[in-house]
Image 1 (cartoon, rainbow, N blue to C red):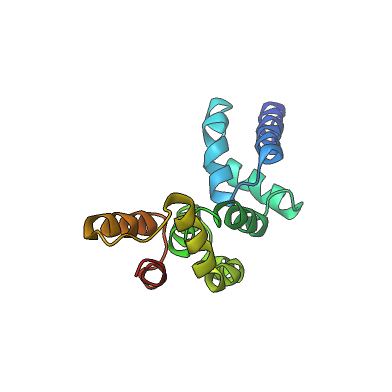
Image 2 (cartoon, rainbow, N blue to C red; image 1 turned 90 degrees about the vertical axis):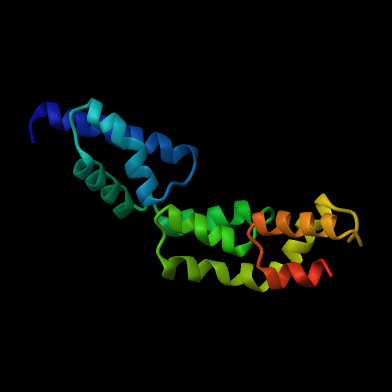
Length: 152
């Protein structure tokens, strides 16, 4: 490696560490986050992946920590379906999601009820208002079965 490439690699590693110091990032998020800076330094996506893999080996980047952190931050606002979709969009594997989502699935009714109560005081008899409440809960990613239990 040339001295300039080595210096660019150090700068890119420092940038990745800077981002990781602020919050957890998934592997794919971090690679994409540092890619623009890497291109400014004359590096490419493979260099980004190499650096993030080194950080992963040092346990500075972890998809498991990211997944757990993401679920904990979103579980009081969103349903299981939305969280699973967003984690998949962020490059998490189905196996990894399944490891952490189990508790959320078992508590979905309680979480959905909490979200619903925060927005609405009572179930209405007006069909239009009931449909509005159902759409709100669906937009939050709760299953229709759970929504039916809350909004009768």
